[in-house]
Image (cartoon, rainbow, N blue to C red; front, side, top):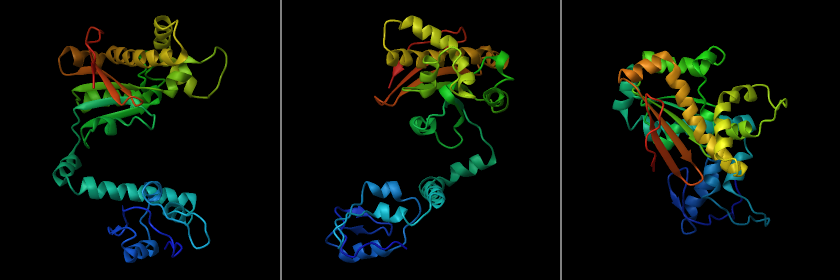
Length: 287
């Protein structure tokens, strides 16, 4: 139960946890909202839409702060997860019973997506994939190791094998993105200087992309070189993909196509191209 000062006022019309629309014209609903226990995970959501005036003591307060102060950090994590799942269940799971009955039996995705682990570039969100539509692998800088390094980095390689050999996906897309931290680390890596235990070993996969970017953008600044490398690394991953015999065979037999994508979250744009069996890129489309 969260109790806020009785003289606190709602500054603009908002939806309360009770589903009531409150404003200064509805003091009863305001009082109900103030005294009601709040469902989990409202913190950041309510921060931007609920603002209380000064309390009796003259201090500014907010629903979000009062709510969050009642839980420990661990409890807030649980509340956020609970709220997120309940929102998904109510707005997605329960509204699409046919879809979830189908995916409960088996998964038959048409796509495999290899994307970066960056929290800003979730491919399911960016491309609007439905549950069961895309088999997704994410790692730092969306890299695919070449076959000769598959046993050194088996996680991504195993996922590719499973997607092609078992799930029989029809398309594999490698998606890079703007302001990639992994690519920045690759572009600023210094010889004989170790800044991490695992990351720097992993990004060595992209050295050929770095070399190509430095050559093509030699007279440009670091930011432009990184952008060039972000795109070069996508094609390097596609080239490494095509080097896996089972991927190559599926492409040559017409059962699989390879695609590149670049998401620019600064501009809100997406660049797409086809990657051919001959290792050449097709025309780029920009959305």
